[in-house]
Length: 256
Image 1: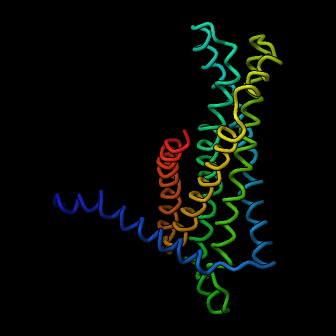
Image 2: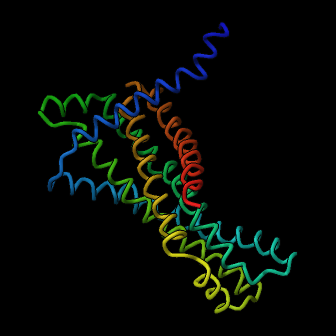
Image 3: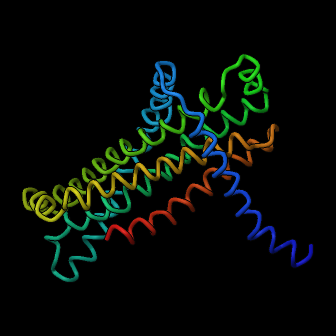
């Protein structure tokens, strides 16, 4: 393999793939229709992508809260600042860890399922069958999953944050003996609803859009073979993680 072909693989191919993904998104948005059928299918996808992800989100959130509180307590105690534990935990969760970790878990649980489902539809010619029945696959298949991700991820982030705070309370109040009212009072006094909490919810909506867009795109563009679908699910997780982390940096820079 020549140097030029290696350069093309590393730089040109990702740019071409990004262009195809953007064209796919514009096509999907231009062919959106809103009615009872689309609403019901969107709600079904919210259940599939959101409600059925609750278990892993709740368990992960609780233990992330435990570990994060443990590390913060160890660090703050060296400076005699353990009273700031609640504030540090809440800000870390609301601003960064909640949205980022939730959407990565979402991509691994729901995003891969969506990619595999659409890829198998393509492999078994179900998408072509919808075309033959004069049913737009973009409207029936892509639109509900795209909208469901935008709706589901902010709700999952909220659940993740609540469980992580619960884990923080369990460690700090019940294990380390920190005063509970003081713990919650510091959070209420220092966490800004608009900048910190709502800023995190805005990130969650953006990340949900990214995760659902990439999931449906890689399923739609996958090769109609078992190997092609497997590769598409892998691409969904990797690309979503990279896109979310990059977008998180950009949004954080503007929101500080």
